[in-house]
Image (cartoon, rainbow over all chains, first blue to last red; front, side):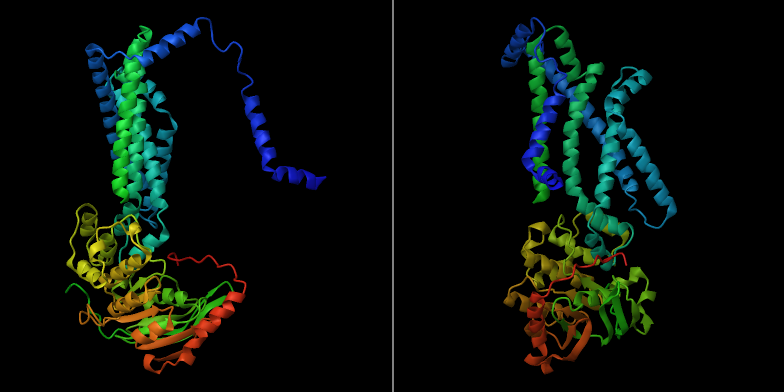
Amino acid sequence: MISMITNLLENRRVWILFFAALLMWSASPVDWVNLTNEGAGSAIRSIVGSFLAPDLSPKTMGEVIQAMWITLAYAVTALSLAIFFGLPLGLIASGVLSTDQRFVLALAVFVRAYLGMIRSIHELIWALLFVSAFGLSPAAGIIAIALPYSGIIGRIFAERLQDVPEGHITACQVSGASGLKLIALARIPTVLPDTISYLFYRFECAIRTASVLSFIGLGGIGFQVHIAMSDLKFETVATLFYSLLALILIVGLIGRSVRKRLLT
Amino acid sequence: MNAIDKRTGTEYRLESLTRSYGNRTVVGPIDLTFKQGDKVAIIGPSGAGKTTLLRLIAGVVSPTTGRITLRGTDSRAIANKNRFKDVGFMHQQLDLIPQLTARKNIEVGNSGRWSLLRTLGSLLLPVHDNRSERVASFFGLSDFLDVRTSLLSGGQQQRVALARLLVQAPALHLADEPVSALDPSLADKTLQVLCGRTGIEGEFVKTVVANIHAPELAVRHFDRVIGLRDGSVIFDKPASEVTDEDTSFVYDDHQKEAKQVRLPVEVDNWGRD
């Protein structure tokens, strides 16, 4: 009897069936029959139509390019701030600056806690907080992105610095390096290429976040999407959508070529 | 080049040195003396304790009992930051930083002599260090200096690690299987450079202690050959007096080993000890 059960548990097909059933059950709360409301059909048709024929008039294009520029500026500024604070904080948080000074270790724990706190709160929540503090200003949006991003970047950098293979460090130690020299020779060079390519990924995220944040009135692509949606100008929405896609695609391509260069 | 500390009269003594992991003695007791300028090859089957012995001499593993003295004082009394002048160690796993170019890896050998400022600066600005380039050229690495180390072949990486050791220029060069990934003719050339027969000869009189997998390479390039088995020295002779009979144990034990079930390797605290 027991062997039958264990046989059953070791069978991959049983597990696949189990998870398939679980998936179906999880979808049961959805009211599949009345999935769409009345008139949805024509709305969907008009949206699809607009996406096939986006508004490319000079006036709209001018607005779109300006909106993109604002979004990009937010993302760049926010990410620069996040890197400027995140990397040094990550270095401290990693605890590699000193292994025997209590003050440095205590500082590492403190910074780790700080990084954890700022990244555990989402950009949107920070934005709401800063908007109510500063009003609808670009600074509110930028800080709202920079804060959690510096937490994420700091944490990733700290983890990478800790995970440097012991051999890289011993080899430099045997060659006569110690203390900060070990960080400069072994730890930072080991983690740098991966960190830079990760920062490019973060740049993509920052653009997305900046476009979302502009929904709450900070200007930029999201704001324009919001306006166009309210006016039911789906052709303009489509233009904005494609522009954002192009922007992220370009950043992705740049990131890829930089990464390729770093790895060869 | 004149920055290199020419430590003369350095004599290494291993005094009843042992190293155990748990209740398994891997090395020792061993008593050996390395005089300045000695070129010593250690041969023995795998599992004989060759690597542990080199790590002990390098100071990355501490002995369970016994001690190592140099210039008459216990090696543990030497400050860590000055140790690089006395001992350098090329580990069998090479421990290169794959993300860096070969040049940067070789320049790590300078890290003891370079100031913190220069070390940090070398991160940002390329430093053209003549010494590193010269050493690299002896190992036939000139064309690969600006290639990422991870893209080099195993044999090239092995020579990069050796070049780093020679740039460091300690009084005692320790190398664990320095030519295991090289073809015979390249192995010959490389060992000639390591032992100072060609290339940087005369720059400093160095002591070399290396684990060599092939007894014929040991006899051909080194002045003195030590046979190690089960952690103990079974012979210690000038290379000219080593006979085929002396070295046959390496192969015999290899064959015996193939039949044995290997015990799980214990986790050792490499680098933390």
